[in-house]
Length: 110
Image 1 (spheres, rainbow, N blue to C red):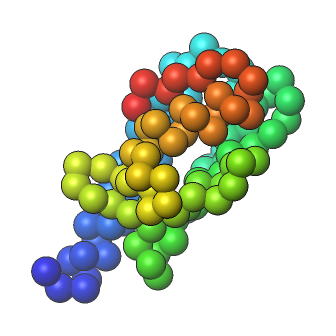
Image 2: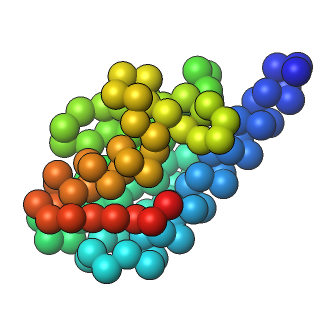
């Protein structure tokens, strides 16, 4: 695969992922707001004002998640994103950090 094709595949995977997260947030029972500015999705937990930030890191072809518990770098490994340090897939990681920050169970159903 050429680097351009690889970059195009990465960009498509990121875009699809961010849209899926936005859809899951829209359907979640927990009071959260989100804002997307190009390659950055900021999730705000309304009960306490804390944030979880997802950002595209094109140079290294990763998706980064910044949460109160730390920063997580995820690589796309078909069929999805895997955290390089914890081994969690993206849905598991997001549910965990959102639950930790919310103080009650959060399930996005990604």
